[in-house]
Image (cartoon, rainbow, N blue to C red):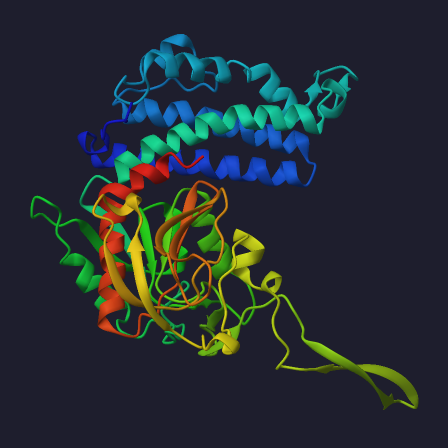
Length: 434
């Protein structure tokens, strides 16, 4: 069944509390995944308890009901969750999962055992025989809760008018030097994006979006269903390397947000808001040779930097975090810079499967289980099928990579249309991307 939108039936304070609970549920699961990867199984369990508790509490509030101040969910608590959100079978499955995390186990995993007035103390490691396999199995159980909540949550936040944010160029403070660098996305600046999105209409003629500018720091409050990065291949950052700007953007997506990158390959450059300059973001030093130099009468090796050496995909943010690669220039095939080709919308954007022409630049070269195509080129100059626009699963959210050049009106309006279609129908398919 498809969940119903109940959020707008709540008071404003209830809506804000529901949003907080969902954000805590998703971020707790993100922390559990991280701790599993670094073999910290007890911390992983602690976050699984946290996440599973916020699952049932968020749905209780969304059902316009209240819960008692406790950690465990009873059958009576599960009965409070509306059947417009979970079917009877789903409520039973959720309760069975939640029952595997009783309060006594929660406390022992977090604190171990301490008996006041005696010398009896037991660490969590001594109390439980927890290993990687058992932790992975329990994380998979809780992942069902998380994916179900994400599906329900998307039906709430994509009920128009949809809150959509446009990165303003600031990371946090107004004394920063805001990003003014728009590689391959020069047709519209941030403010113009906001004004254009405010004019997009729903099928009934009402406003589809509630658009506003936002700093990166505001992404963590869970306000926006979609965020537009209008800066193309760049993004605002504190400093010249990967820093809090990128980490906040990644966390926003991991916790269910959808980031639409406006043109080219995402996160190739950052804009240092402290200095007002842009930098290439790579985890790679192109060293071509070693030379000998004198230093205090000792021979010291000196590394020579060669800026013309090609950058391996593994050095770029898109590959390292999203496991995705784009096509690059192929001078031997006369493919240099943006190339005009025929593109076709995939069915996720509507049954009409629009065909048109566009200047494609840095399309995704290959799909995977985490990459869903939104736009493709069937017969391209690259000799293979490529994907100019895709939604890349990242945690509970998505990165929409736009491999087109948005320096002109046609491609800009195409992306506006894609955002509109994704908001009206496409999100339903994304909710089922497990």
